[in-house]
Image (cartoon, rainbow, N blue to C red):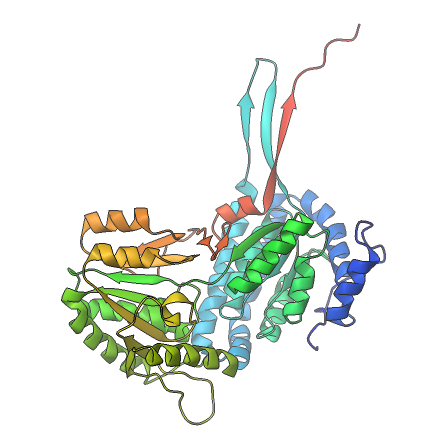
Length: 463
């Protein structure tokens, strides 16, 4: 299938919703060719009405069946993802299995997602009940497409919504396969997968009749979606870019700190939403830390992982060149390898300063920019001076510094003494330009529902 096609099993729909005018249809068609997005959204609305009436336990069974299908096809999904994005199959398979686990989690949580009751006067009762919002548009990225899609799609389906899912154009085949594996366990129209580029996503996000737009991806796109939601009234959930800091205190082992920094900056070639993007190290351990980080980067370069495409590699290298031209040094990496492929070496940048792009902006590549700070307070202050608010990591043995850090950092997630990790069922809520709303965890069920308050009193007897 070509970009812009609808995956198999998408039903037709002959009666577009009346509130969607012809001008909107023409605008959508102008960017999606023969793909009729209005028909797809209309079909989702029709299917959602019955899906919302389906017992929560039955919806949960559909998610469990989808999770089983993901596990059975994990190798195929991982191989497809590797062919499209270069992500090694072993790593991609981990993402698929994580996605299956997420579907199982929402299968358990969905049926017990509930409201609460209030007692007013003796003969009156108020209750608050969660109801599905309607049609959810899920726009998912390429760097961990199955795990992220499973979260958004799973939470939406568990709570009785219908979903139109558009995966990234950088991994259309992976997204199509994911969709087919889940669609076969849902009634027609409840889950539809649309393929196309960013124009298709923008058209979907701006359609009247869409009740929720959930997007994981770049900040600029997220802002456009937020503006569209303001026009249409759709609820918008955004996990945009991040510029996550790592603060290294004076009392930690610099070799261990370098291992943590390398893992945070270089895993999956830095193509992780919560990768380490900037490092603030205490001057007392700076020399030992930088030396150890250079050794770590050389080890990572023995088996470099590719960036998703040449476009991203060009962007990453432009930030490195900009930093070097402004006075930074690259003791390891910093050059585009000769020959085919899209790899970029794990790169250490020292002598970095606040105004450099590599410090101010998300890089999304295997770059570790290091800035030496005089004390912990200075590092914490520098880490806070950023418009993004996704996550941050602090390496310290001081309980006082831990408390200062998690209370002060203006981010959704603070990690202490581990660059990655988190308990099963954990959630996160980005801040600033990194987005809005919960993107996973039990709280995502709340985002996918709206609360109705009902007040009941007995009718007076007939006269």
